[in-house]
Length: 480
Image 1 (tube, rainbow, N blue to C red):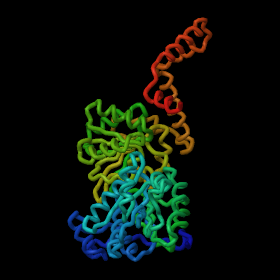
Image 2 (image 1 turned 180 degrees about the vertical axis):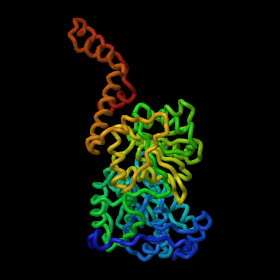
Image 3 (image 1 turned 45 degrees about the horizontal axis):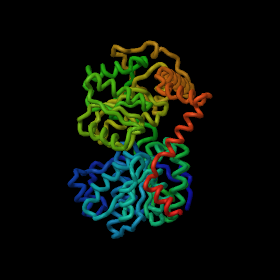
């Protein structure tokens, strides 16, 4: 495989300009797909779709860099299933022809649902595999043969090791949300998966940002790729109104409730850093009469999907989430994103606020900034090359946080983590010790007792007086 210098050989200097006159009906897709797209309301392709679909149909490798919500999924799904349809490709048991690798269960499910929608008239089989659920249904789908497999890395390797899956027939490999793979620690898994694929294949590599590690990975996977970049890395969508509010940590929940009560805040995503904080914030909101649900990594797959469904169908006004929800969940009409806790990673900030202002709509992102998070805000402004408006028009404005001296991001992160550990240890020390009685019993048992030999003898006598079970009696007869 040819390795390329991504910085030099495939850089696209001029930004792509959307041709508003182009429609899906003008692209070189099969008529069956065009009819389906018309039925589901797809009329005009987004910039990433305009560029990627023609390139992918030619079989050229793609390095795609685009913000979340720009239509990446259709950009790689449509040409992939079109090629399978035109080539009349047959499915093979346990051997998919297309592998789409994605970091989260939610994103895998979404991509699979889109495939089913796009290919409803193509008579193709699509399978999705991910962890956190029993594997039986997934194994059966693989055994029945799937043209396209959408997978998360862990479950993919698990089923390969169990001989339920073989990647030797893969013709097209799509790596989606590559930078998120890095954030979630999947690089080792990806490096195990790549050698299992045929050397001759079509590759599509998509990422919202392009840090050096991801750039290096792309260079080992892609062959003479076409780079398609819609927005510069780590920049935010212009249609999102961004602001920050300085507030003390202990007042954040009150500020959140104030915004929900006093402002036109409707369908809102609230982001936090820790799983227990998500539960805590959600519980307090529900207690005060707000319709809120929470998702994070400790929730079961069924619970997460149920929460997303409630939020998507407007049964819940608020979805409180860790960064697991910042990518891959395509929920319409999110009006606000609130960073209850600010991430120290500018890329995470970009992905979080990218949940609003999707498909050309407008949205608003509000960040709650405590004294220790001020350095995070300044770092985000520096990386994204913008000044975020400071909103002081609220009853919980913290002059202490606003006037505080910003420390380095690393020091601020270390300080916050130390405080979280201290609070966690303090909470543990306050918990009642439920096992004290059992410990006492164990201590008594271990201490010498003049009646212990008598008790032991009597217990042995009781045991010996018990009748044989049928199983033991049968085994005794057979042995004799």
